[in-house]
Length: 428
Image (spheres, rainbow, N blue to C red):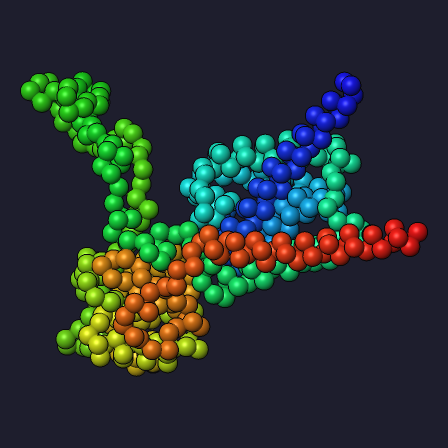
């Protein structure tokens, strides 16, 4: 009886470890595959901090490799396929990333490790301890790998593996060449940009003013309650702000747009006024063509942007091209293409966060994101009515559709395997 309970306990522990490691790897790979370009940007951040910016050309291929490998390893553990190979590869994966996450936690080169994309943010130390837990669970799986029951036999295992690989790759490529199927960023469709720029004052950072005074060559810090304003023996040196309590930061902190105007005398573009409030308070349709880099901008659909710009202007709606390119580059691009666009500049990181396309188009009204399009899916015309709004399938509907797309072929393969086994049994 005791032996039976020991076996059951071991089987339960193996199942929990398998679900933990396989589930986290699958989830991590999936949410990063939702936005492989965002993962590439995060890799860029790390390379810059490491002084390896010359390798940034490899960021996107590394991103695709990372998200597909994570999803594959997670699914292989959940399905119990190729146990020895899967466990070894998962172990190598964790043995590489655990020391890396320790370095990140100690040095804090970037605030967000990006291990769950934009879907779920945890601190760098939480990321490190998560990997320690995964290593412990993986060690158990190594020691008790014979207890991992595969869901497919040797005949169907290659087909199941191939389908999971194909699904992961196609899903990542779809999100790379189209806008991400799930948008976890603060500029998603339906989001109010002004609301994302605010935070409850009671939940915000709390600072206090510190006064530095000197007496007999010794400096001392005082607060507003006890500084020696009426003691002439103290000499005022400096006044500083000190963080007392770190609070919640707004989801959007650096959204700012500055318009470019033609100089009256030379006709060349010059920096104008800040139009952020104008953009966010516009009560009518407002179109933002977003191109973080004009030098790297895809020009295939530029004529379609020109058409939409003309139609918007004819209807009296504002249309801006937002870019982070230098003014001289904007000027040269303007002269070369003669589009008639009104240009404005914004931070490159903000523009890349707003839309994962260079260029892309965003429709706003009163600062609310009504719709977004990548350059290959621009509307053919502008009806300027409710049909401009994004179709509301919803994240739940898309997730259900993807789950069925992944699982139905696996169920079909399992059914074929069971049917084949029954036939062989009858023939015996």
